[in-house]
Image 1 (cartoon, rainbow, N blue to C red):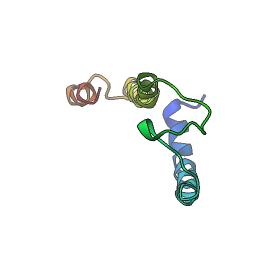
Image 2: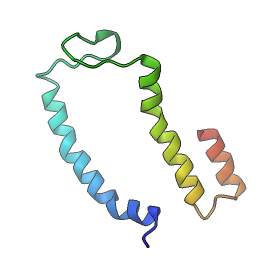
Image 3: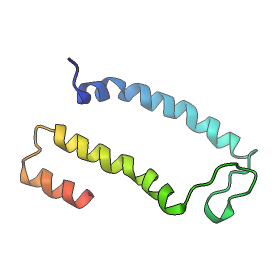
Length: 89
């Protein structure tokens, strides 16, 4: 059975390539589409969520992924690792 970390290592290059291809497309597209954010949001965009909910949805993946990676690490019990993890969280 393949572990989570091995799966991440295998797909890391694919993710970098996909992000590198997508970044210029989004960059050029945003010159032609007005995409408001926060107080500059326009009514033309259908869906809107509460600012606090949006912030939690934006930050939760980093918190959860860092916790998962810490728990899967071989060095999970070492003091430097725990200190850096606690400072990050």
